[in-house]
Amino acid sequence: MTIAHHDFTIARTYAYTPAQVFEAFADPEKKKLWFGASDNLTSTFGTFDFRVGGTESAASEHPGGVRTTFDADYVEIVPAERIVYTYRMTMNDVPLSASATSIVLEPVEGGTLLTFTEHGIHLDGESGGTAREGGTLQLMDLLGKALDAIG
Amino acid sequence: MLSRLSVGPATVSELAEPLDMTLSAVLQHVNYLEDTGLVTTRKVGRTRIVEPATAGLGEVRDWITAHEAAWHTRLDRLGAALDAIHAPERETS
Image 1 (cartoon, rainbow over the protein chains, first blue to last red):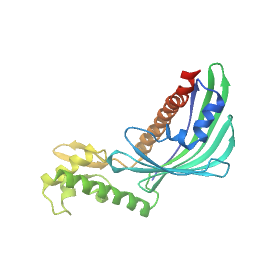
Image 2: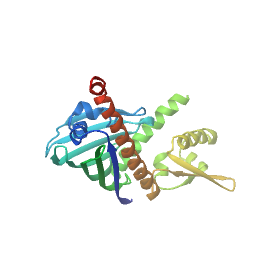
Image 3: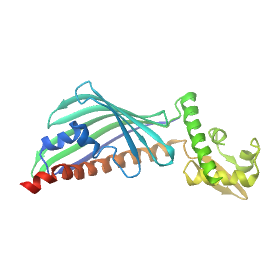
Image 4: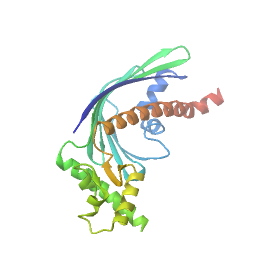
């Protein structure tokens, strides 16, 4: 089994005020417009408790029958300035990653500079026989369905 | 088949052995698994070796790359979402 650590930063400038950008994270209806929205996956949103100590969850179905989950805990929220949270992900019910993330908003000429920084721990999904077995069973189910389709 | 591969690479014949299947049927399954990215295959002489694609650091690296790329895409979509949210007020202002 392997474990990998990975940090990355993404900076984006949006032509909106920090308060407007912040709202796209704080308002569940606005967040749904961009988070988990994609042509090739279907997301189901669970809890959305946007406050310090609150949690947020979502599950996504990907092509090929792969299912991922996202569970976040909000650590700090300063309106129009920053959001700090930790989150974990699973793939087909196997632990996949644990991350700590900060989103910093700064007013700049022409709008808002958003700096997204993540410190991540990534697992290979083989951490434990039961988990591995669960993942393999899911793959076997997937294979079974595909074979049914092949005939 | 995937259970067998989870302990390491195998030849097509080795995969067929415990299963009550013909070699051509096993090959069909292997081709499917390869198409879906669950396994990779390589030829060694006349033997085809099947390896699970879900093990090892390479897989974790691929996942990390995809994970980071997903956040780039998400933050691009955030820009488009902000445009959509604020388009009406721009039109009226």
